[in-house]
Image 1 (tube, rainbow, N blue to C red):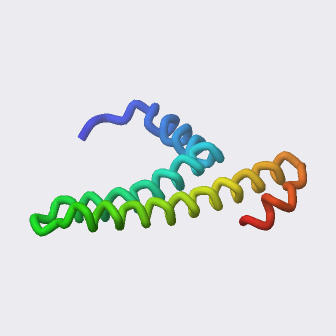
Image 2: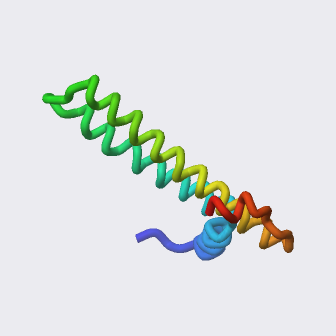
Length: 97
């Protein structure tokens, strides 16, 4: 086992602080949505019995659904950020969350 230099604790604390930042959380959530779309598609395309036309049509339907979820998430994050800055989100932003 390697000897700790004491720097590990400092790095871990830095990473922890980084993960608490709003930017990190937003990227993590968007990545989660993207993986949620790409993984099933990837698995389907790897099957030997894959029907490409059907898979493409399903991917397009899923993509539209995912895009709608991402838009709602963006509006929610935008409204949350405005509140954090002490500003009131518009009714358009609130109605779509």
